[in-house]
Length: 367
Image (tube, rainbow, N blue to C red):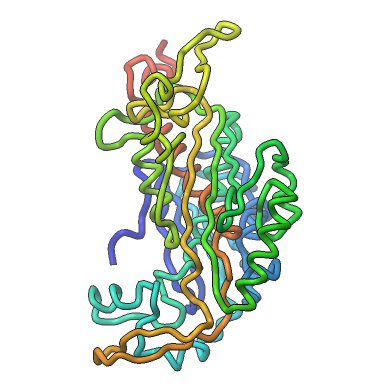
């Protein structure tokens, strides 16, 4: 299987399956000298792990990370960092009744068509549990960016038709409710909506918004490796994501050029923009404004209602999914979006160090 690696210089490869012995990541290209330990990475994994609220699967995984290589005396050595997370709460028997059936909304059929084989226990590599490895690797990228003053913050903006009010925005509030919404009133309304869906054995989609602040202007390439294209690819690789917006996104279809253009101006001697309809990226290159990204997450496909499908022999059959599943994906995926965004920004910033001769010479103190 190809396609398990991401990035060019800061390169991450994930491995493992949902119901295997464990999963993990190998991070290659991390600079030496970064202070890192398991406790720091664990803080990010704890935000993603199951069983933290009534809106998350009750699967009880500690998601404890082990650093197997690449760190010595609390600092990165510049060599590949291997991160391992053991699976401790598999219940593969929950999937035995559907081993020959293709779950609606899942990768089962496509996986079987491609490989002639699939791990029916939760989807194997196509399971959302694979994202735990991304979060562990992304925590390292986030820390490197933080040392440069760059912050990556995501949250749930909308659930169903219930959206946050920016007048009530409190980033800290998202840690106080199980839906990761930075608006207490919206979170309470959304909670009632999700509870109703749970009673109906159904699920809901949601929109995650991510703000990346203090990215310097000039990051990204103008053609195929546009910064927004790379960010879109990174976030779209998260299994449940079905749409991406940068800046005003799809709202631009209603706008006029005179409304959509961001005017440049000087503020305290610095180049700034009067507005940020572009979402911090113009022509595939960062413009110094906050980068605004939104990801649309589909409803959790594993619902407990009876559904129509087919089996491996192409018979039309009924399927009833059992097991432990989230009624909404987005709250646990917020930190996954942060991880993928951070890895993308860091990788492109590393590539940018050779964009001019001056930058290359500064690297070696030759100026």
